[in-house]
Image 1: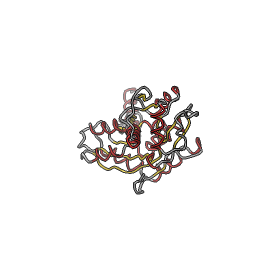
Image 2 (image 1 turned 60 degrees about the vertical axis):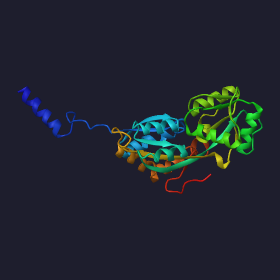
Image 3 (image 1 turned 180 degrees about the vertical axis):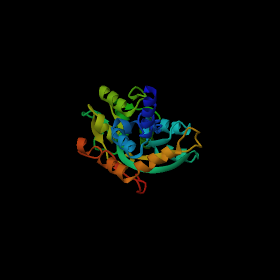
Image 4 (image 1 turned 45 degrees about the vertical axis):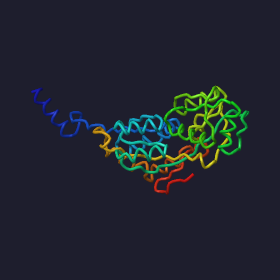
Length: 275
């Protein structure tokens, strides 16, 4: 009798969708992105909302933009969120990526000790880079394959400076870690504004507003041309969501409550920002 009751109970649980029902498989995508989106706290704000809206869980790999692009190239990420436009355009031209869509922008800033021994406060960015090099003041570079490092190299080139020697030090790490090293050494560094505002203790903003400091982010969908593991539907879901009105509003509001200013400017659907 007990076996009959148990069998009937099991059938009832299955019919009602109880514990005996097979669990649905988790949908999970891999997002390769720059450390600035993580160090600033933006991903902590966006990703739970994306999961709530779409059902996709996100596994994040936060590295430099160059490394993120390489993960996409090898088919080890479904979607990229990066800020190295020249490298992005070259990568998309290879043919393994899908859509590349404008998401947002902020800007880079030059930071350093409040005493400003190189005297860069308020100068043009090319003049600032020259003054740092000529003064021999410490400059701390990320020294990695990131969008920030790529922009820094371009700024040195525009200033006609080949950085090197004891004053030029590379961390090989992300933005947050590089800011901490620069603060410890009393040195200068280049940072995106968002990470500076969220993790800049010990450094002073000395140079901003130059057109050459514009910092633009795009989302890039990967396709199965990069590898069989890529999930194009996951890439499209993320790209559509982050360029959609709800996410764009969140991006525009991010940072206002804590810092009194927005950390990123939403750009989806707009023309490409031009320095």
